[in-house]
Image (tube, rainbow, N blue to C red; front, side, top):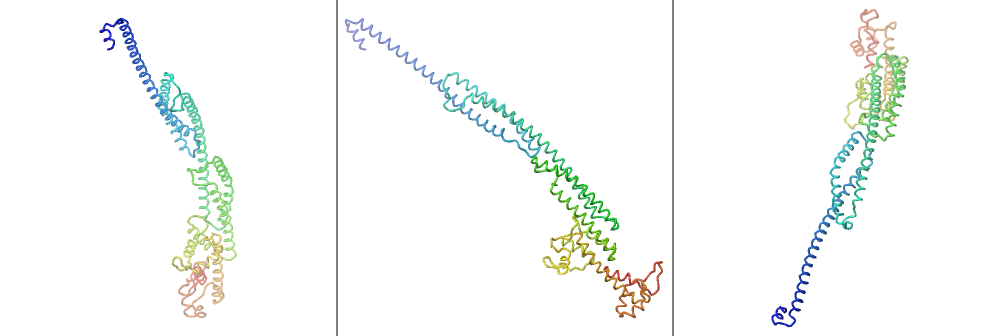
Length: 429
């Protein structure tokens, strides 16, 4: 070194040179030591900032996830509680209980955030550059969540009580509606299956009409229950298929049926008394109508009416589907003039009575003709009287079909034929 060269040359200022050299070396060593110390401090500080950076990032990620969870939970918890059944509200309560049970995991996340925040604050650094969430804000969020949960508990309890009340109202309506419908069905069937004389049936129908009108109060009760259900926005009822409107219509139809049947029976009695139509014939007409009125509606469609006429002995031809039957159409023009597709009991009986009245009138004329052929207008006719006034073919026909005459005492009169029974049988058939 330059110092060694000067010392070896025995420079006059060798002591000063050595002092100067030692001073420079000492300062150099100190500079190196200070530099290393500075480097170690910077490395330490760098490690601290790396830790802070990691804490910042971890806190930001967890805070964002926690806030997203809270927003979803808040949306679910503040969703209006509006159900349509007890089952729905119970399902909501079950889901809410499951949510509350899962809060322990959310609380663990919240505590982790608090611990991270505490670690960050220990470094005495500024705000987190990666998120706007602060621990104070998250604590407020957590407190708000507890408040929302309590409000949700209250809403669910209130809605459950409301649904239980609604369900009870449904049951009350269903019980009354089902009972009323059963009564309507039984009453209609009883009216359509009446028995006894025409006068007895008329009295029974009048009693039923009074009973039907007395049931108006029960219908009013059902209507009040229905109005209460509408007021509470109850739109369905699993306990019954009946509605207020439907039952009111059925009651009105039954009331009208009572009036129609009463009028019809009065018409039958008048027809029996004035025109001579037998009560047996009227009973047969009525029974046949009821037989084909399968749904007890008090009316027949055209197909049922045609079958009924055939059962009564009308010789209506069989036609292919789609083809018209002029004879039957002519009858329909009489019994169903407005062409609504149905024949009521009243229209049917009026038609049958008119036809039977025609038969009775014709039968009476024939009986009178036979009576005129007998000597002394007897209720029977002899073979000689027949052959004397009719052709052989006509006489043979009558004798082959007329029953022997039997008087009121049960005594058979020889060579006497019952033309009255013969005529009536002929026109009935």
